[in-house]
Image (cartoon, rainbow, N blue to C red; front, side):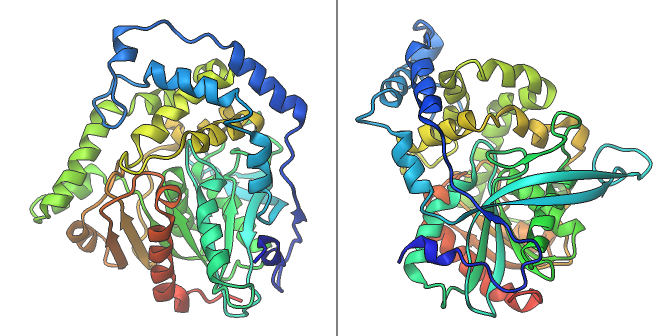
Length: 424
């Protein structure tokens, strides 16, 4: 069935979004190819020839990988953004303006509580149901991903259901300042996590789902999802596939036994914490420098983000090079790399506390960089209603293992749907 048949908005929409088509001009595409072809790759060194990005003891990206990626990216026979754009445009896309009002006392920036208004021009893809009891579900990506991390999931849903039988309204936005989502004052102030969460709640409200919806998030999306669930009443349930435990939480569960498999997952996270966080420190302390440096050439940007797609994925089922090239191309064409640094801001304060008054579900993928064992989750979160551990998959779960991801999402939504009072 054509994906366009899922583009009819349900009754109750408060602000009608405008249909949208991704359209990167031939001039922009040719410029990217020219820049990549002209890019100079550093000479061989001990470090860039002795690296293994399938684990967390690597020196970083392999020079051979980058040389090969340069060749593929500039070969029309091997990679075409034009074809990728056609594929991405199969999904219903929209743009919508959302204005929020956030108190500075809750936005992570301190202050005396004065309201700060933000106007967002948000992009989202979606599959909408004609079923009046469909449950609204918000899916949020992270860095260095984008909304089309969820494209395989949308394909699975469209193959499994029709607009009449789809049990959900699926909303997949570009997070604020990422990809095609912008805001009027983006050069005036740094966006906060609360500001981003307010924009997402505003989006769901504008679509008529303000009375109740489910949120799912990974990476930065998991952090925004926690703020969203803890701050906004419309968010009724939360599902995550990444969770960073605090020192206090680790101390509270230190004596609770876990399985050897879970110990191995924690060891992977500890290795990443020790050797894989250099990028995050740069993002949080010198965001202007890294963004300006990587915006000089697409190949420089690819080296920075490509390392993550390789290293954080389950290397037994690696993401294709073309998938990684498309992610880097999207960041380049939307000029959004520098805008997306707010998630790492030190001004944002500590990571949010998970709300324990709303249903919570967690999926643990084998190669994820931060997880929580089931016994620990059950102790820490009395609201835990769903937990599933998988023997494959990594940080980009919806992209790497869409079938498993969909199974988990559907099981979780089936449990929490009665709590989502605003469903159509």
